[in-house]
View 1 (cartoon, one colour):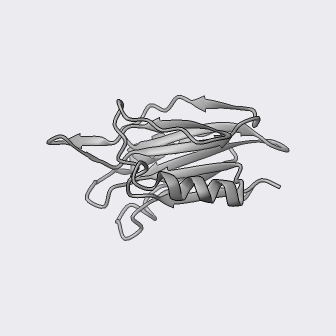
View 2 (cartoon, one colour; view 1 turned 30 degrees about the vertical axis):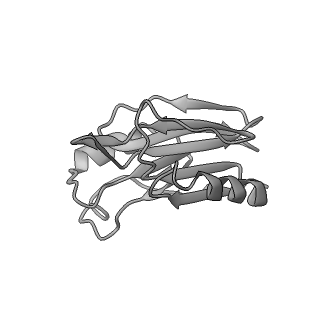
Length: 151
């Protein structure tokens, strides 16, 4: 059975050992991480997983945000090229059927309009498992028109 893990990790390198232990104990199919604080020059690896990262945004030399998606080795998958300003990364994976898994981070101070969100959602082939830190207190939720359905 497939299992998925989502974690706002607030520093992937700082929590590398804890995540390694969690991966060994739970053996998830995929892991969606937010606030990795990884830059393009700093990446990381985990045993038995392939890691896809979107670097954090740097402000005055300090990284903010960043997302990652780990997929268990042996799971057929391909990365989806996203054309968006959002901090998001997505993979199309094949289990008993093909699904899209996406890790997203929406900073609490960022403002997004309906067009940005709708454009992003339309780039994700259905069915979609969207995991992330949405900062739900944001005005964003409830403003998009996309219809969601269970997989």
